[in-house]
Length: 332
Ligand code: ASP
Image (tube, rainbow, N blue to C red):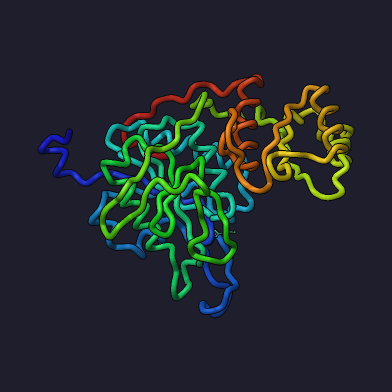
């Protein structure tokens, strides 16, 4: 229920910039494809969308400015801390994050596992750099803020808004290297869409089991490698990992993007069994797409790895001290 006074106040939303093509600039002629991701600051992106002012009172913060192919656990940690910093403040309704498309689905799923699910966190991105004549970033940013500011977004948790479509963090995946409609929620379908100025939600956000996980301390992130089952796979990669003293002490998990319904070559399977016998957690997904059923229902291989990282980190010492509730309005 909204009170008469609160209904007059525009929602307060924090937009956190992390880089990506949405903040990219052309390296030459803007009509040509060459560009560098993660160049412009988030303030510059916001300036290009004056209509945002009619939707919300916006505050901006630059958390990083990178090509998301270079995403690190340190940036993930910083991002989660900053989102939490803002969301615990009662006057902040939601956070929007600008990000690269390459690892968007991993960051979104990571955040969905470590953040409380009540206030919305909306990630957006672009397939064309900010300097392109037909840039898709400004509309995506406007759509993301529209979703974040919408009363029905409360309880959605972490979602991705791209090309007018709202995807759950658990389901979203990049499926095209070139199309502006580059993301899909697979068989489950998206959560909703933006129709003109309205948000239409078709289903509830999927619930995550066991969360929210605590954020691992810098030294508590385990090593979890992702392998694929392919013709000729013989387990040599697994044996190399186990015998390499620079890797082995921190190797806690292996995720395999198996063939079909999660099958692996006999020789690779034997190597994985040997790894499991040495205490390495082994999880099998499918390189075709999310597998149905079981505890990991609907998780792609990259997301299964994110989940395993946090599950394993939760068993490592030392743990990160609980996050302090900051004073209202304090920015760092
Ligand atoms: N390489 C870019 C990134 O992920 C691609 C993009 O944003 O579309 O940062």
